[in-house]
Image (cartoon, rainbow, N blue to C red; front, side, top):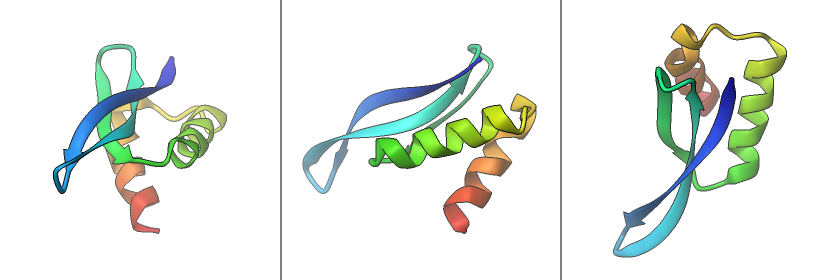
Amino acid sequence: MYKVTEEKTTIDNKEHTTYGIWYNDEFHVNDISVNREYVENLLQLCIAEQLSPIHLYDVVTDFIGS
């Protein structure tokens, strides 16, 4: 099952919370965005399209690039 991850990251000497997507301990992409809503929208798209987790990294990079 997909879920949003959260971790603290330092950017330009300031601490920020960044969000990623995780799938069953096998697949994850960290630091997608500091905007939780943006990552949640991507997560919902992955769920709605029944994305195979093997394609998660490619989908994230395409989503960020659009």
